[in-house]
Image (cartoon, rainbow, N blue to C red; front, side, top):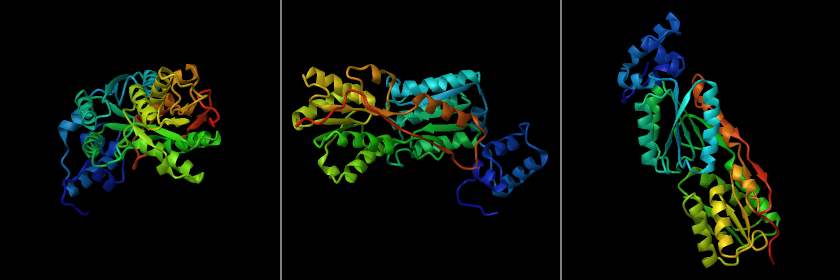
Amino acid sequence: MVRTNRSPRLIDVAHASGVSIATASRALSGTPGVSDSVAEKVRQAARELGYVANLHARSLASGSTATIGLVVHEIGDPYFSEIASGVLSLAAEHGRTVQICHTGRDPEAEVDQVRSLVANRVGAILIAGSGFVDASVEAPMRLEVQRYAEAGGRVAVVGRHHLGVDSVLPDNRPGGRAVTEHILGLGHRRIVVVSGTLELTTVADRLDGVRDALSAAGLDAGDVPVLEGPFTREGGRECIRRMLADHPRTTAVIALNDDMAIGCLSQLRSAGVSVPDQVSVSGFDDVAVAQDLSPGLTTVRLPMAEMGARALTLALKEPGSRARRQRVPAELVVRDSTGPAVP
């Protein structure tokens, strides 16, 4: 058996003995449910690797199993509240409670929240929302998650991350392409994209979809301004103020989430710009209020509550030998906020 320069981890013991991380953890801690032969095989692998259990981390991960930790970026964003509703509903069916943490899309705050959840001995941790394009930004979180998982904790995420755990992946790129094809099909060419920070993988994926559609139509994506702001309603309002000042001939706005799109509609209304007669507006997510706006918001539908429930289902399952990924399709929903391009 080959040793490495770094300290062996529980995952190394699991791989060496051909069992899951959870089984290796139970075998080493003497938890019932593991046969004597398997337990001895795991202990032998641990001895040969020189593995020493992190008893403190194990005590945290193996404490209360009745509480699920849910980490979200913005609890006031309907996208996250709908994901949370799916988690809460399924958790209730399993007799679990949910502790929700808010990070404000700050990677350091996200790590702090996860540490707090581990200290509170939650039985599983769900992380909802985008990862960060720069893997080094997520490196501290990846370390925390690995430690927790190696100690027997379970983790699942919604969105693209660099954490190496089970994930539910919405089709952000195909959705971005679909809504852009719709806008182009209405004859729009003077288009502006309203976007959250480009550091988020969700933004990067949706923007790639927009660029895919532009390229397929023979257009230069570089000619389409991308106005970056907070991924919030106020961010949408701010971007529209900049658009009206710097790109006044724009006929269509593609907002990369519904919260920003709602802010766009609000600011255009305040500026006396008619939607969709003068400017079309589209969003992404299809939050519950989208159909009740005036005009109703054209957007890309993601089954957010289902995504939350899927993530919890993954976290409650026995961990696999490798991270599991579940893709969730996106669907274009056309309403009254988009119309033919003005001459």
